[in-house]
Length: 223
Ligand code: DX5
Ligand code: ZN
Image (spheres, rainbow, N blue to C red):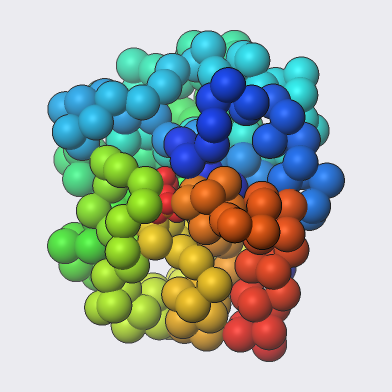
């Protein structure tokens, strides 16, 4: 199943609720909330208060991408705010299993495992059964509006092969530089969940039309 997850990092925060309603009406499948601590990544972004503000605005799942050094510290606040999914980075966890199990079984939320473009894909393989989604970063995280790293396409293909043999239900999400050109590359290689920030909220045709066209392109490339 193809899913489009607009990243609100690229949205005009003075109109955030209105824009989230627009992308929901246009068929967005989830809302991607980029949380940055200024340590794991050089940027500082937003906290649980943004999820709390958005919760009454949308029925879409709110997925929290924790680009932070100590993700466990933030879970309870985001759960109380209404988050549905937590994506943590393999780079900051010696053994991700305890935290992933806590997210899934302790908190009853969906668990995603993210990894940066320089992390070997085989490092993810042992954890595929512990997650609902693998997030293959297609840029180095920290900022929106970056360019898709071309080597990502082969990494997605490799990951799809691993998932097919270990945990077929695991989703593959991609994040960073996903637009009308790169979404087809990523979908063709096996990704099925697409985070898009600037390609949605910076689209000249407007966010609703952008969500619709990204959906069509991903469906066409993955069939
Ligand atoms: C990057 C974030 C991405 C980013 C995507 O650090 O994790 O979610 O907001 O933005 P675009 O789609 O503009 O690259
Ligand atoms: Zn993200």
